[in-house]
Amino acid sequence: MEVDCTPEDLSKCSYEERCVELGEVKDMRLEAEAVVNDVLFAVTDMRVSHSLSSGLDVAYINVETREGQRYCLELTEAGLRVVGHGFDQVDEGLSSQYHETVYSLLDSLSPGYREAFGNALLQRLERLKQNGQ
Image (cartoon, rainbow, N blue to C red; front, side):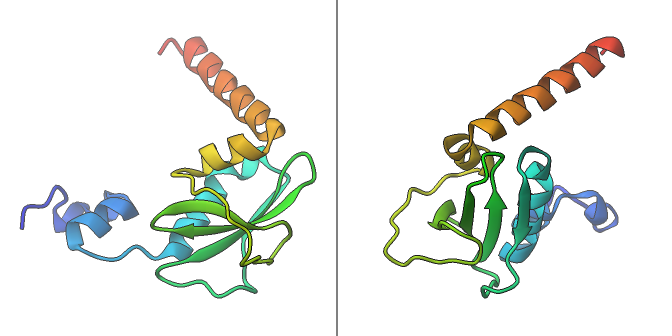
């Protein structure tokens, strides 16, 4: 088996790279934590659900948009989708589209997220410009 990461460098590789290289299954609970940490700055509240069962194949994330709308999101290998319109709520009758990324999902739900994300991007570009990079 050919690997891009040596055992010494394994701690420097991303979680996803380690899963691919070592043939491991992703733990959706860890993926969910990473999703939350990635976009928490652009929503009012976001956390992994502790009330709903999560595991290797599924995790649930509660999110409140800047507009005050609450959703329960399901994270699986297929992507993310809205499964409820409240924290820790799974509506089996709700049929919603899967999104490959949390950015795409939140972009479709929240103009406030879109604005916050855009502003953060502009600030980052300004800092890079000021540093001459």
